[in-house]
Image (cartoon, rainbow, N blue to C red):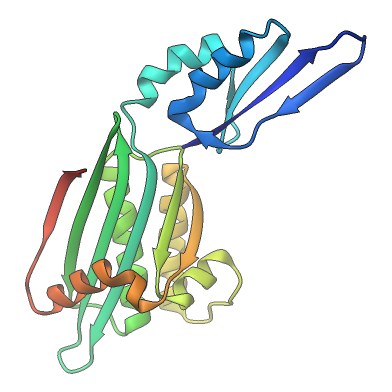
Length: 218
């Protein structure tokens, strides 16, 4: 989670001057606040997160312990593959996140029989990645979502129209899950080489090699 600080500076004149910082990592918040307050000229200081929530220093200190228990700095990778000969789909999902000062990674794949094409497999992969976010308690926080499917990400952004009824149903499921979690999404289209982890998981699912791991990383 990124934070910023807004405050009024008590100048030598009667003019009120408001300042706003750049975004910085949440763990630096109290360091910056304390440094500003040492000047003795800062009043009406507010701390703001990327979701638009604001707190005073006192309110933030009470909340900070709870924030340490929640996942943050979340990046989701997804990929879907479809085999024409077997009509099977492989889904790959990778999630990186921080919690309590430590970093974690989830790797999971799924093998499905009921999908009809590669685009549908890509949608299913993203939806299943969002279900994983719910499992680890993600809520009310920014999330970066990365994949190599322009169709999924551009249609989810509203840049490209979606005319297929089944894909529209997947869009509805994904949008409802995003709303349920209250997350703020940043979507990024990758080239295939940049999405190797999720792509490999999807391929392994098609080969019936199933993986589900959740580990702390250095």
